[in-house]
Length: 167
Image (cartoon, rainbow, N blue to C red; front, side):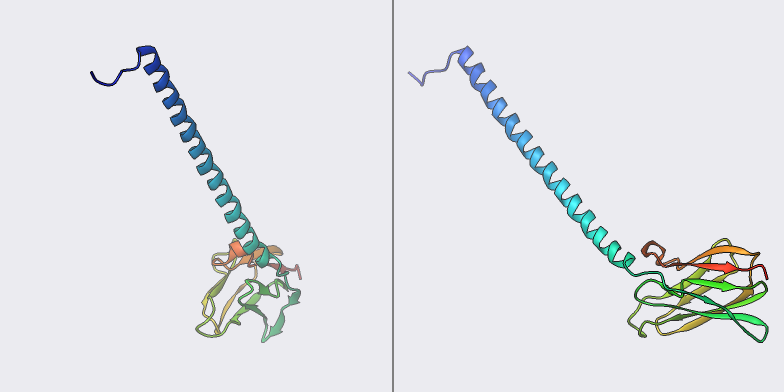
């Protein structure tokens, strides 16, 4: 005679117990995966937050007023590894304006920067490589405040304000 087979009710109870154990293990694994994913998201967000806050710790730098050179208002704005414009607020009068953008990073080591005045398609200094300088001459818009940005580093906070006076 062979081994004794469990009665049908006992077999059902045994299978039910195995199914419950299996489900319990699967739920435990899912919880573990979920907890791991949440921890990874929190750590990742904290890392991004720390990087962003270190950039945002760099304050906006002062203001400057353009000086007239041969009838054209001229100002120099610097940009470098801190992802800020120096100065970040510039004041100009109406008329012709020349913006000189100087990238202060060491040649071959730093990121390029540009400058785009919001709402003015003609007011854009193209990419300036590390250690280089480029300029733009255009007619200042109507009096008001205009935001300018480095389109590459805008997310890092590289922005400024162009103030055009009425006289």
